[in-house]
Length: 469
Image 1 (spheres, rainbow, N blue to C red):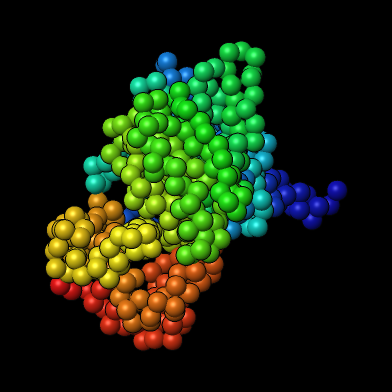
Image 2 (image 1 turned 30 degrees about the vertical axis):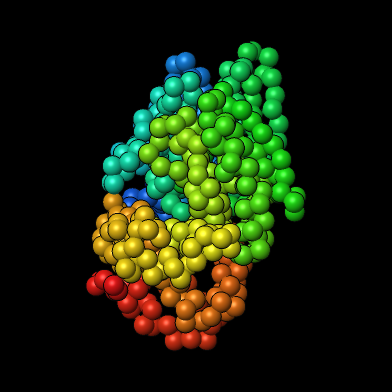
């Protein structure tokens, strides 16, 4: 063996030692860590960079008697860059095992960030599967506005609600609305309990050990804050809209009679929404009604909104309207919440207008005048700040986001006329169907579709700091 051969072998041996020391192969040393957090203006640590999730498979076991949740999450994602590590948002529960592409992966958690280091780096464009096995008693999350979200234990059951970041308390994921994915959720609960989630019920199976497995399928993209799970002794009803959308509603004992008037119009409302906004965007609908006082709010969880007790007709309509605006067309960031709430509030105005109540013009004028006889909310702080500029995370569900957001839409209607405005609503829902949108996306779309210069509407009503009163 000559000197050159010995030198070449020495170089190769040194390279092998270097690769072994880093835990990477020669082909994968180019990977780098994915970003921790997406730098959302109000929730900078929400979500993570370097990948997009395509599908969540959640297998969950829950016993209301002890409050312990046992979970296995299989997350299928596509790498947007070479990845040596990536993060998942996950809070509280004990992580027992993590695997990537079937191989055990190293992991550690700091606060709500679970950092995963695959055995081999992931290539840009690679589709990869991450499995996380976990367990424990979930702890609810307190929002900046003081409300409670996450996995919430109830008397005789539980419910999961996630806006804006509470879903991280019960499954690991990329918890920002800009990363939407399909879901399959299996909930295993003791016999005698119902377990409800999003989408359509694929199967209900006796496991043979005193438990029942409910398998739910959501083929359309879902933002993680809109994923729900509810366990209880619900009374379940099923039906269909005239156009064939299957409806599945679960109502807590004692809430059936008071819920019946509003839920009885759900099929009619769904058909009305399709006429106003375009085809219903999902493969199923329905509702979950919890015992009165279980939560501080209702939430538009995808296909199956959650209500804290028997809902009113207006509330059912509001959460149903979110299926188009907020769920199918989801916000690009939490600063864009008025695209959810302003639209759903305006849908309430349109429903009333079409069914013998005050017109949208009368509601608009009532807010300007503070006339609570037309709308009791007209004396609230609807003009405390501009709807597109909430001062902080505690304000993203503030009154101006709802009511002044609706007034922005009515100002467009006043400028464009009824026909053009109706076409705008339908076109916007179709243009961004199952996607995301920002305020800038909407303002550009509105001007293009109407052919109008709407700068005065944006300057005064959408972004203006001073009251338009």
